[in-house]
Image 1 (tube, rainbow, N blue to C red):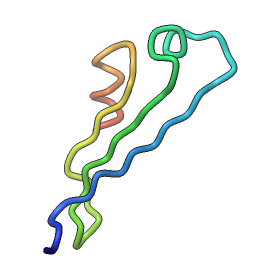
Image 2: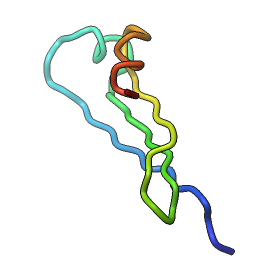
Image 3: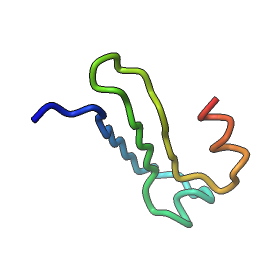
Length: 58
C-alpha cells in the first residue's frame, strides 16, 4: 500500500533554562510532507507564541 504523505518528527532538549524547556521539557517539530515530492504541506512546533509557529510555517 503506497503512502501519500510522510510524518517526520524531530525533537531536542536543551540544557538552558528557557521558557520552552520550562513549559514543554523538549522541543518538537513535526513536518507533514508529500511522499513523492518531499514538499512540506504542514508543520507544527512547540513554541510559546502562535506568531513564532506562523513564522516557521512561512
